[in-house]
Each structure stands twice: as C-alpha cells, then as structure tokens.
Image (cartoon, rainbow, N blue to C red):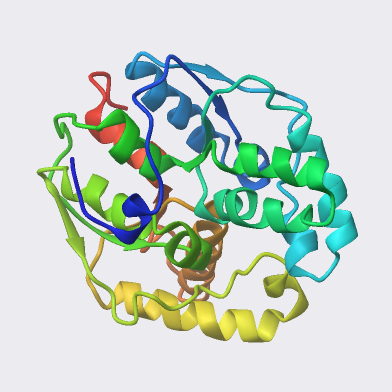
Length: 269
C-alpha cells in the first residue's frame, strides 16, 4: 500500500521484523484493553512475535506537556532502560509515539550518554498505522458490511507523526468502508491530556464542536488511532444522547486496531 508523504520521506523503514515490542499506552491499558489485544492480533497475523513488557509505564507526556520536565525525564528514563533488544517499538497512539520519538531526545539533550540512548530508542518507535502501512504492507480482504465512518486523528499524530495519512490509507484499503470527511478535520477534539481536566469548560466547547462536525457527515461511527480523542469524542456524544433521553449510542467509536481486526478477521465477532 505505497503512499507518498512527508512522514515517509523523513525516515527509512526496515523490512518486516520477526519481533516487535508493544508499548500499549496508559489509556489502552486502563480503559480500552481490547485495542491493545487487537493490535497484538494484527501483528501476530503478519507472522510477528509481539513482546509486551509489564514493567512499561507512562510515556511521560502528561508531565512534559504540563511543564514538569524533571518528572517527565524520570518517567522516560524507565523506558530507556526497558526495551533492550534492537526491535521496533510499535505504539497504537500517535500521541505517545510522538512523545517517545520526538521529545525523548530533547528531554535528555544535556546528558550525552542518555541523549544517545534516547535517540537510538526514538529511531525504533513506530505509530501502529505507520508500521502497518510502511513496514508490514498491510493488505487484507474487507469481510465487513458496507458502512460509513469518520476518521479523527489526534493533533500529535497529525502534526508530529504524520500518521493521519497512514490511518486514512488503511481505511481506504477496505472495500466496503466509506470514509467521510468532517469539516475542520485538523481541529483538536479538546482532550489534550491534562488540558481536559484543567480547563473542562473549554474542553467541552471544543469537543462539542467536534462531535457536531462528525455528526454532520452522517457517519455511523468514528474511528481513531488515539484512545484519548476517542474517549473524549464518544463520551461527549454519549452525554448528549443521555440528555436527549436516547438509550442507544448515536455516535459510537472504535480504535483503528479493533476496527481493522474485526473487518479483516476470518472469525469476525
């Protein structure tokens, strides 16, 4: 599934490896574990052995984006010590992937030894959709029924990782999936990690605009490769449904990994 993009031209991609590490992210671990399991299923189907290290923790982004670099370094250092084999690190989140690939080297810029280790780790970090497109060459029959979906890409995934292109390419490869474009597709959903907790009123206003934009497309569901955005968007939509007295969700959502697995698995659920 070759596509041209700035993200692709900016780095070299290896041949499909026999082993990868999975960095599952806090949100997947705590709120949407099925997305992590489906990531494993997608990779294992390609003949790749997936290694999940239980000692992994947060990527450090909440502390980093909140202005606490020392705390972010302490968290990031745990990851530098963890992924010892020279295997790709697949991250089912452009947000966490961007933190590890782009910001880890800056966090340790003052220490030559740690900086070199951070750069070496960063070069092995791949956002999931990027990995599936450029390394795995994902190509599977769409076994699902015809449907219409809207894709939402997180700010970090779009602006730091360029993975909005690979997420779109994966959806476009599914013959029965119609992807509709929302107005102001590049705008934030209002989550922003700790932003949503520190500025809830502003976050609610932003996500309300985002939900309205997605609803206006007529999409049956929203798909995203970032669970933070997905939880924020579907949570706001669910609250609107509750206030309207609706029992069934009118805008359900799904992580890209789960959406891909369900539609291309021989044993669909």
